[in-house]
Structures are given as C-alpha cells and as structure tokens.
Amino acid sequence: MIEMDDIRRFLSRVRSRATEGSADEIVSSLKAHKASAVECDKDGEAKGLWCLEETLAVQEWYLKAFRLLKVGKYYDAWCALEQVELAYHRLSRHFQDKGGTFSLDLILEQTRRFQGLFPYHAFFSTGMMQLEKLCTICRRIVEIRNPCGHRVGEIYKGEMCARLITRAELLEISIVWSPRNKYAVAFLVDRGTGSGNDPYDYSLLAYVLRGLRRPFDEWSYTWTKKLRPHSLFVAVAPEAHCPCGSKLRYCDCCLRESGVLMPHCEVLFSLPPPEDLPPEELHFAPLSDPAPTELSASKALA
Amino acid sequence: MLGSEGTGEGCTLAATTEGFDYWLRRPYLSVGVREEAASADILLVPRERFGDQRGPFFPVGTEEFLSFLREHAAGHGLRADICADSAGYRELALNGGEWLVLADLVVRHAALPVLFSLLTKYFAARIWPVRGDDPVEAGITIEQSTEPPHRVVKISYKGPVKGFVSAVDGALKSSGLKGPPQVGDRQRR
Image 1: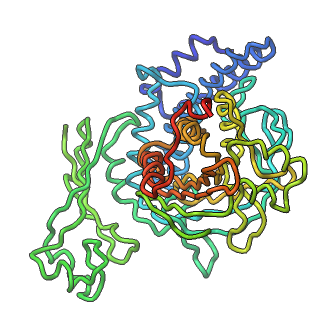
Image 2: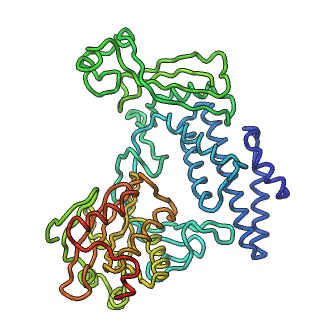
Image 3: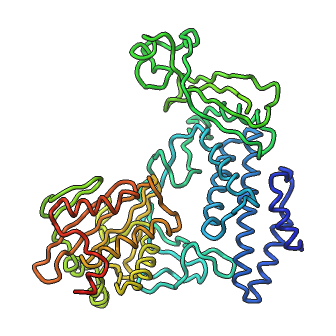
C-alpha cells in the first residue's frame, strides 16, 4: 500500500506525469486507506480520501482524453472530457484546489477549450417520469414526506450520496442543442449495414492536436472572420448555401461581395508547435449541416 | 386564472384562484397530508399535465429543493411542505437544455422576503449550482391576505437567475399590488 505522502506527491505531479503510466496502484491504495478510516469511524479522514480519489479521477480522465484525441478517437475523447467535468463538479463542492496543487482548474480550462472545438451540435435527450428512487447510502426508497436524511452530493463514510432511479417511464426522446448528457451525440446510421457512421469534421481538433506535444501544453483560440477569394469556392453552386455559414444562398450573400467572409479560428500555442504543422489550413465542408463548419486555422507563437 | 394584471422583465403576473385552499383540496392528497400541509407557509405544488401525462408530478430536483427549504425556512420560524403523498410522488426529468425548472410554490405574503432570500441561497448551494446568466423557470403564487376573501396572484418567471428577484419584485410593484413585506413585518403582525 502506497503511503499517503507519496500519493499526494503523485497527484501534485500530474503535469509531468507520463501519459501512458498507470494509476492502478494509487487507486487501490486510496481505497485501502479509506476502508481503514471508515472502520475506525474517522468520517473526516474518509471524506478527505474521497476527495483525493476524485482528484485522481479528474486527472486520469483528462490524461485519457488527451491520449484518445492524439490517436483520433474523438467521440471517445469527448466522453472522457465529460467525465472530467463530472468528477470536477462532484469534487468542487467539497474541495477547492487553491494554489493549483493538483492542477484541477487548469485541467477544467483545457477540457472546456477542447470541447469548444468539437463539431457536435445535435444531441439526443430523454424525457422520463421518475417513479421510484433509492438513496445510495442507506438503500432506502426515497419517501418525499419521510426523508432518510442523507443529502444528495454529501459524503457519508467516504462515499457520495446519490439517487439511483429504480423505476421510470420513458416519455420521449428529443433532439436538443444543449444537452445535460453530453455523451448523447447524434450520429448517423448506415441504412445498408446498420452500423454507425460518424459524419463530423474533426479537422480543426486534429490541427490543434498536431500542434500540442503534451497534455498540459497551454493553448488558446479565438474566432474571427477572414475574407477568402471566390476562387476557393468554385465548386459551390450560386443557389447553394453560402460558404460563410449565413444559411442564405451564395448568390444572395457573399457572391455579391469581393470574397467570402469565412469564420476563422486563430490558435495560439504557448510552446512552438512541430515544424511540419502548416501555418494555415483551410477546412471547408460545403455539404455539412448545420453550418458553419467551414473554418480555417492558423498558428501563432506566444 | 382570472386574467393578467401586470408584467415585469421575464415575468408575468396574473390573478388566480389556485391558492392554498385550492391545492389542499386536490383529490390525490390524503387527509393526513392535507392537515399537515395546511400549516405550511411555503408549499411546493405539482404540475398536473405534460403531454399525454396526467396527474401530479414535480420537476426533477424537487426532493433536493424541498429538503433545502424545509431546513432553512425553519430557521426563520417558517414551515415548508409539499403538496404530495409519498406514494404518489413522481419527478419529471427532461434532460435537454440548461434550464433549472423549480417546483411551483404557493407562499403566504408574509413569508415572501424569506423565500426570496432562500431562493437566492438555493441557486448557489444546489448540487448543480446556477449562477448569473444561467436560466431558471419558476412560478410563485402569493396569497396577499390571511383572511377570506384571499387575494391570490401567480408570478411566472423565465429568465436568467441574476434577474429573478428584481423581476418578481418589480412585477409585484408595477401591478399595484403590495410588494414583499420587510423582514420583521411578520413578527410585528
């Protein structure tokens, strides 16, 4: 079992931690320390250990997301980034990483930055009537007039209290733009084979990932507009949607102007990106909808 | 509803007949619950229709909301309760959007300032805190008089959380109805 000081040291060195390393031994040691604290009725200590477990969860999900992004598994990375947010949220009620010892705020910032470049717009959302719930601490069925006393989100004997829905009725599945469950991304299905089909354009994310070497290399981006010549859009019919993303016809929009005012993403890397990263890339997907997915990226050094 | 009396930013205000008496007579309440809930100053009331769904239900998170109100209202000498039996209690969870939908409230006029202060605290303290521009949806029915005939108005608000209290306050004042009493009025009554 790893000593507590070593566990804290491990957690505080997340920025230099190898992205391929395993935290399994830390996980099992934290569990063992917590079990021992619970056995001795040391609730405060057990809660502190729960906080360290969640700290590790934030870090590990982030590192996993970065690894997945690097190998182009974008949807899996998206789900891992959602787990970062959830673990951070569970933890933030009980523990603030003042001074950035465990880099939790930085991880959340980086997470939101990556999420902002994903091309997902439409999500599925369920509407349900929850008929029966259990308290995860005492396993009692929730009675609204006779509450068990355990509060959702609080920590009891080193575990967070939640509600487990045991009976529900599904009412609807909607398509929404701003989902509570980010994993519920809308994908297409190939009618012939029935297999999933990912229609999204991840080229901007891929560009950024090519410019980053490590998970904690800092970067940022801003959206601007840049005028592009019509010669780039000869394949777009005048009656088609304008490449600028306005949803007007090309002939009623930018075709009347000197060029197409395209959404432009300016990426700023704090460390020089690899030399083979082009200074600018134009990504244009005229058939994709919802617009705008047309974008370009350029790098700049801080 | 008896008709619209006034509006504020993000707010509508209308006279209604759905005060404490209305809710305490709902057929799905047992006699015991009816008696208990009658002494409440703040009462969480259900919605009775969603699409094809009928019968009483509450927005998801009402259990947490009630628990918060019960605990904190008691510190001000007030009682919060819910217009539901345990057996018939259901929550509607719509997982799209960022809206926080609160259970509708029926409140006695004297308890209004405490309720406002508790709601502000609740927005920040809930498990998924809401702040600033986060949108909320809430309905508050206020009984303006303690003796019959009761003057009852319902305020509905849909907008950013930061504008909630001032919009509700503004709607009350612009309608010519009594604004919320000051803290302490209740003790002087």
